[in-house]
Image (cartoon, rainbow, N blue to C red; front, top):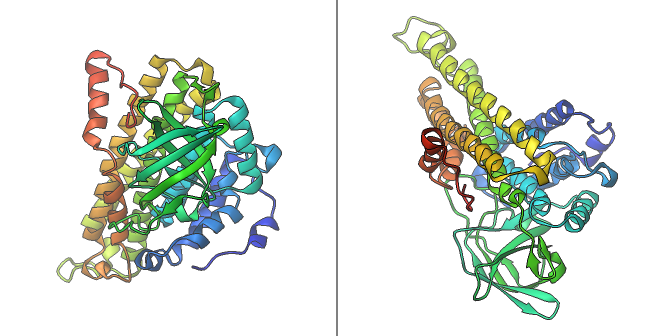
Length: 405
């Protein structure tokens, strides 16, 4: 992969506004876009790509300024993810998950825990991965003196080999109590497997992981004081927060598909021999299709941006988050997720109608946009998102906080 060197970024002043950070993300995306199709075909572990995220400062976007972070908000983080995903959906997902797992200490942990983790993460430019798959209940946590011991297996572990630290999740044996802890990704007993072989999001390092007696100190158990978990409604904001990450890279992938297709149409597509136009870009059905898809994308982006700002108000005052506020927000997130899913699938499929038969070559790589969207949108059924919205509209029912809602 062609990348800029760290001095290309450090020789310039760090961005100091949301708009400047989004512009920085667009610069990074331009680098990623140069060989995105080739890297997708190769499917190699994206070490250079993650280093680019570090060198550009994007990994510390949410971190405290006192330790080298940018102290930006979630609406900015979502826009940054969207920009990166325009060029490479996999790297957009990795960055979005990184932001969530970096923030997870604040969502679940004590103030002492999250202040320490956020400072260390910003200072050392940690890249976060997560061995957290809520559908797997096969990681057991036991006690051994002052340590917790994680043993089992997770079928997904996004970030794995490119991460510096990994968020672990397991259940205390013979209980239903979950526990999260952050450990170095090179911890003894933590083995990442090269078995991610899906049609899309191929560079997300999302293969399985084995935990063979991975140790973490009791003090690392997020949100536990005196070995007892301290619940808050704010703890449950992890799901709507990560669902908006999904929305962000779905819309980014859709935007990248539309931009790539438009470039192809302008520069390479041939007009239909019986259409009466010299350029494909002048054919009425082509113009209409791009107008239709762009309008749908802009509408979905506007909804996503609005919901992101609604969520930021909850992040700004965690102790004021009530079940009602949380539930109303989750309904809005569900609506944004449903629209983003539908729009992204439509755009990534319909672009071929206006690029033509020759655009389906492997070298062009336009298929990667659909493959990436189709793969990740199966994470949880979008019909259940629409159901959350429908039940709220009809009888005011709030979504029950679960691993998916």
